[in-house]
Image (cartoon, rainbow, N blue to C red; front, side):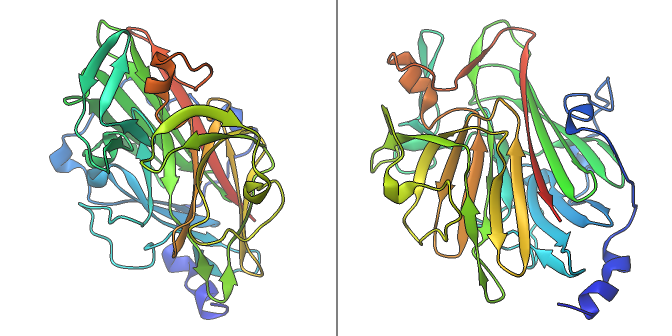
Length: 339
């Protein structure tokens, strides 16, 4: 990638804007106070933000999913970090196992699609083995609010089959060698509802001859999940063979686990001699799923454990479930930096 990759930098990356200051300066301060939503018919198929350090491609009509994340390494090479990001992109569909999508208004699974909310039960459609998986907004079109060289803002509605009206606002921006993504969920109706969200990236297991290694210094405990991906409610010390507090090369098929995690301690993803990515998340993102299929490694910052709403309804404490009152909201962010 050296040489020709660096010379391609001018035509690939543009619109250099340097921002300074703490990350807190940018988070939860929408740069438009009134959401002037464009009609979906006028929302572009793809949105690109870029600066001298990297380039991110989003598909608003496919859940505002992140399709490609190209970074400039310390050696000046251009490196794609997401599975499928270097191939042809269908703007209307995110193929399984590629890119990164947002999970909202719940992350991961709800057992048999039975939503337990404020003393009532509702039936959601199942899209996995006996589960409603990964929320609803990843399958929705999002409307563009604003787009600039280094930042975008989009919005979508919580709607049927979700039984509570609400909105989801997504901000993404490049600040130096970092991509910062934030979500805000608002309750637009008259009833309190449970909520959670997270990000589900599919990072490349292999880049060239380099194999990914990961380190999770904030790993605190492990939630038990049965073979049907249902949470059992049992939370234990992390087994020795699942300990990720040191840098390890995660084995294929070994991990499909949810951990309680300290989100301010950055997760390290490293492709030796190629690139290093640090993933820091806001205090709301109290959990982390690690999943290791053959061609990718998924490191997923989430705000609650797997099947959290049901577990809470069954009396399990501290699942991470948030309850949004009418007119209220919840927010969270994740920052992926490189250098």
